[in-house]
Image 1 (spheres, rainbow, N blue to C red):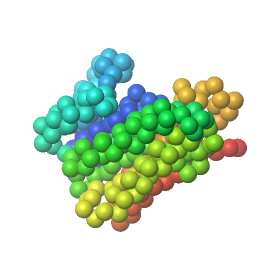
Image 2 (cartoon, one colour):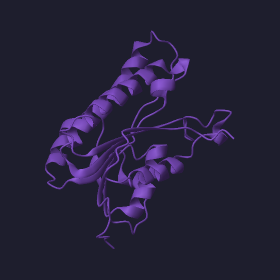
Image 3 (cartoon, rainbow, N blue to C red):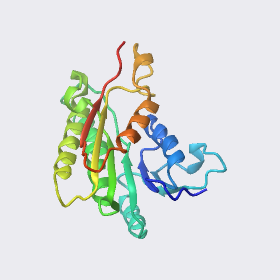
Length: 226
């Protein structure tokens, strides 16, 4: 049943196959009338319930499909209340001379975010939100995360500039969590006390309920160590 009082009637989500993205999708299904997922994965991979009818799919394989995705997005005259980027790439190669690692992190983190933002910024409602799932590694990355940290630092600066731009009538929220429970961190000795992706999703939507007089462009989320 359509919820006519839904605050986020239409959501566009990137990175729905990642650990945080999956948690955000599960939360979005409960509160939104219509969800668009930009992904290269077939919809069958999402194992969604058969009675869920409010989810649509865009094919999005960066960077090869960016032009076709742009055309498909432009052909839709409706605007989104909420656009979320939970896509990204992690390579912890600790060799600062490894140009391949640097290039991949730069392309699949910074350039990806930059292109997504430029594509969707005119498709977000005036009182809507653009949300990016970043990382505290942008300012507190380990010595083994140089390439990754640089790409995330560039994202922070890019979004910070736009959040201060008065031409941008929607609000920007850059959520920077610490290490989360995921396929990447499952082999860590402390994996059982990392941040639960569901907690990230819950706090995200709580933040989106902030009053119209408040703007929180960036927020760091650390794990509870005790």
